[in-house]
Image 1 (cartoon, rainbow, N blue to C red):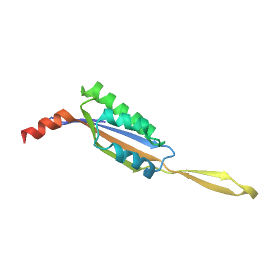
Image 2: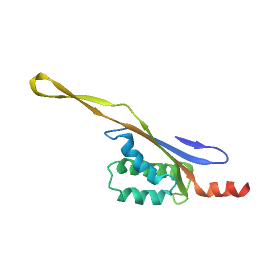
Image 3: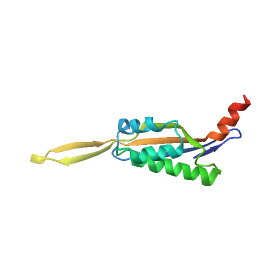
Image 4: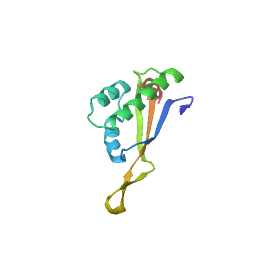
Length: 129
């Protein structure tokens, strides 16, 4: 989803149903990237040892590509203004056990929202105030 208002350009991207990841595991990666530039975020996410960093890396890369292609924003001037993680549905499965019993398996999912803004437009708007 791309929001385009007269004073502020922002790109909002949402990834739903990220499998097998708890909100808490993704939140520790999101906390590291919020407020940083896109280029710096991509470098940080490539070097992070967490499994949750790969889907977030793909999401940030896609948001930067959408911002440059659809809105004409420069990737070097954009930064992550907001990043959220929400809980998604829980996938429930049954694992067969001994004596005809079953054991429940609960796999949590999450929704990730990332908002990119243009840094040069933000600086121009603050200088007018």
